[in-house]
Image (cartoon, rainbow, N blue to C red):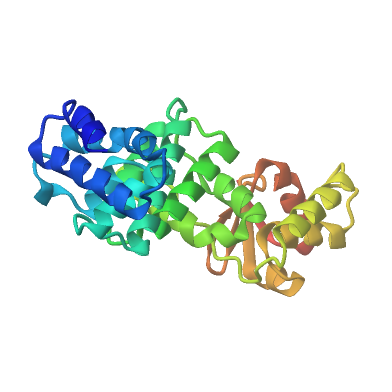
Length: 292
């Protein structure tokens, strides 16, 4: 093992890393003296030591956090024994929280790489940078970024968006409101988008799949707004915006721009295009004011 360690160390520049390799060889031998494949194990872990040799000038620069920043966890797992040696020798200390955070950062990078060629890549990259610089937990930042990317991809964005896209997304993803709100705050403040969150859904939908399926069935049964019963119009709007029938009748004050938006007691709601004729027809039947 000493001979093998000397051969491998000759490929390294820094003395402290060469000492690590020598120490690792002795550590392997002490753990498994009868293992005939120890030399092969030592060679297979050389890439880890080469990375340390290239990236860190001194042993003092090595830490658990530094190691996770230099090598993603999926690659680090290939060098499990070498990582255990670095911990046993006191060179690094790896907490579970550090590993989780490193994994979350890796997932964020992967998500950004997947959408690098999209029209909205610059927006989510800026958002990711802001999340990273914030005091939020890394896991929370990853979830926020994932929702923003899913929203952009779901709505096929090519530029600024409005409440119609938000309402459409929240209809199918009501549990994403908090994460989406952080994204809306970012694009409004940093990118100058003229958009605000729609009023909070006051009656959360019990099941996203069930609500989406219900809405699809109601729309399929309503080919024209004129011939759709008022009760069904209300069922469609309640399902889409998370209202009960009583809340819908109570909260909507007027409808504007041919059904493009509803003014409610707690804010404006942009109406998706596919629901506008239905919203206007319902408002007219209820005697609710409408404006161009």
